[in-house]
Amino acid sequence: MEEARVHYLNVSYGVRSWLLSTDHKRIALLYLVTITAMFALGGLFAVAIRLELLTPGPDLVEADTYNKLFTMHGILMIFFFLIPSIPAVLGNFLLPMMIGARDLAFPRLNLLSWYVYLAGAAFTLWAALTGGVDTGWTFYTPYSSAFSNTKVVATAVGIFVTGFSSILTGLNFIVTVHTMRAPGLTWFRLPLFVWAHYATSLIMVLGTPVLAVTLALVGMERAFGVGIFDPALGGDPILFQHLFWFYSHPAVYIMVLPAMGVVSEIVACFSRKGIFGYPFIAFSSLAIALVGFLVWGHHMFVSGQSVYAGMIFSLLSFAVAIPSAVKVFNWTATLYRGSVSFEAPMLYALGFIGLFTIGGLTGLFLASTGLDVHVHDTYFVVAHFHYIMVGGAIMGYLGGLHFWWPKISGRMYPENWARVAAIVVFAGFHLTFFPQFVLGYLGMPRRYHVYPPEFQVLNVLSTAGASILALGYVLPLLYFTWSMRYGEKASSNPWRATGLEWTTPSPPPPENFPEIPVVEEEPYAYPLPEASGV
Image (cartoon, rainbow, N blue to C red; front, side):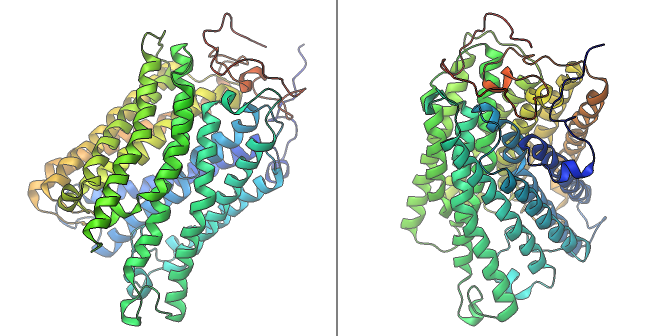
């Protein structure tokens, strides 16, 4: 009888061994469970929103309740799912293995970041259960600081606390990449997944404190009436928008850059080609991170800022599209004349490229001051940021989960079901959000729970799409759960991919590598002559 191999899943048993683990792989799974729960809650709020919008009148909920529904949907999805999803789950699991390390630089800090995330989530959920908050996820002042009678402070505290989790994770990744790379793993031999997480970590560390300070000021204003944002007390509500968007626009890249790293790995593997223009993709990640800090003013074209400021922010917003376009062009060039196969991870990667391209091109509309005035605060904006943040980030997240699931669980998932789910998600997403571009262009404002009857057909299409999309999201949950017990055992490298993480057995041993590997070849050295099974 074959002796059971010791790996990170069976090295110890019991709840305590998981809750006190400092193994980056186990912490990644703790994040996976909690983030999935937050995604499910945020999704339930979305279902309620789409059901209310099925008809023009206020049939399901009243205006106050509707305001709380879309606020909690936005807060849970953005701060508790989209921002941490890929870095905390896939980044935590993979980054040390990808650079040939046994763990992150600060394992205990890594565990602490998960507990900090839990504490922030607890505050926010408590606020939701005891009345909710109705300000929108943007917390615009002076409404949030002076007039709202809902749980603004408790929710802000929840987000404030969670921000520390993001900062700790970013710091850990930066120090790990700088100090723990295997011998021979130079900067230009790093996987593009690592480059993407390095750039994301810079934004986390530099940008998140700005949001934390902003929310703390809102709390101070509500508690002590200090007059920072309330014009009645001598404050300036536009100052809040500057501070908020200084973080929140780069936060879009916290969500999308890691997904771009995932897509780079998948496209190279399933094209059996080295990535085209590796240095350009690597440096474009840094360029997106840096330029992303300079474009916040395009959210404020109608706030009364000067024409000259509007022109500068418009030009900078166009400029940030250049490094994003570089990535799309390079992925396309990698696919060209490649030996392309269409397993589920590749379907999600191709879906990401399609959705991100549509989201990026419509972003150019919003970077144009004249067009932005027409569609400002309409459903056009809702559709645009869902294509970028939700379509892009979730396609990357699901693609990454499927790609590395054999490594994470040691089991294969049912490939045909996974392909069906990818197609259902792609179709459901378009049917949900493409009609919203038309709704916005026709003038339907966002955040309204009643609307003129002529908008109903497009809203019904959107709600039907949301139903299909929900099915597409449930399918992976079902077959991943099934595969953990019944799935075929995975080899160390079922995709014949390059990268140090594929040289370890599936699931990996607790220490990742028996000996620290020495890297002697360039990244993405496809095609491989033979699969390297263990």
